[in-house]
Length: 127
View 1 (cartoon, rainbow, N blue to C red):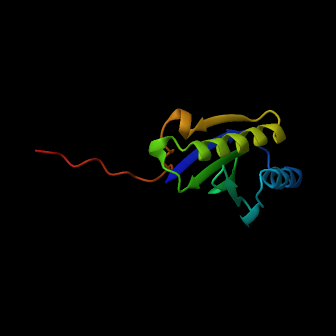
View 2 (cartoon, one colour):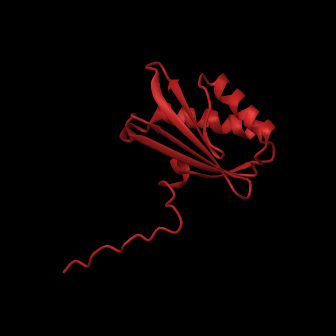
């Protein structure tokens, strides 16, 4: 199962921005659905096989945006279809949010970011 994440800075939330997000996902073949005031979801059929890719968009404080893509595509093969969807969404976001920057991409910068504030226990000592 593929899971790719990206974080952007400089994405100001506004009614116009939300409309632009809706138009972007429509051009990509999906329909943006707002789950609550700051979280949205879009399902896309991607690639030749119409692989179902789900993208979650979270608008965060301080003009930040978190994007998480998930699909049944295998990560061991590089998740090419899911990666292409991530690239298309990020490029669209950069186009509609002028001046924004991509701060983190799990497919380039490493594994998924760990949520802040959650304690992760240390590995047990091995004798």
